[in-house]
Image 1 (cartoon, one colour):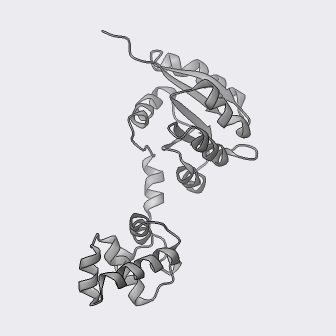
Image 2: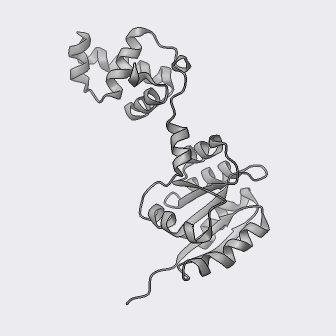
Image 3: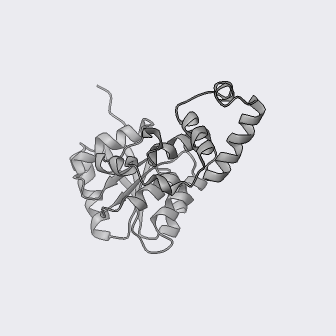
Length: 213
């Protein structure tokens, strides 16, 4: 049976004991399938370390001294666009995790995870999946108050149409306007919502509970 490839990991974390624990426990818990090839406790040095060591995946602690873990994620994404990045945190607040995902992380794992529990999600991320704990996913999808989006009735109707996947032609027929007018209305709505695509607008509609109205 051919040897399985080793997953080479860089750890960005300012807690030396945690880093040393990963260095010792990950190889043992994964039958030497995972090894830490570099680490730094300086968020500003993360991108250069990743560039030098060429790991398969980078673990980044979100709660680090300035510039912080989220900035480290963004810097790694800029300098090594194909790098797979996993954010980690010991806290329960979903906000930093969401910021990390927006900055380019493919997944988030709590620092309380046991070493033997890390291999399946790391392999999934390397295969192109996004990995989130179920608690965080529910927090991110939980509807917020609809008043967070201040739209008039026509704008809300248009947003619902976008969120349900209707085409420009279908929306034009429903609103009794031209396709050109619909395109102009959609562009204005996206600017108002501060998003850049229909998909983002649809996600926002789901977050604020608009689809249940």
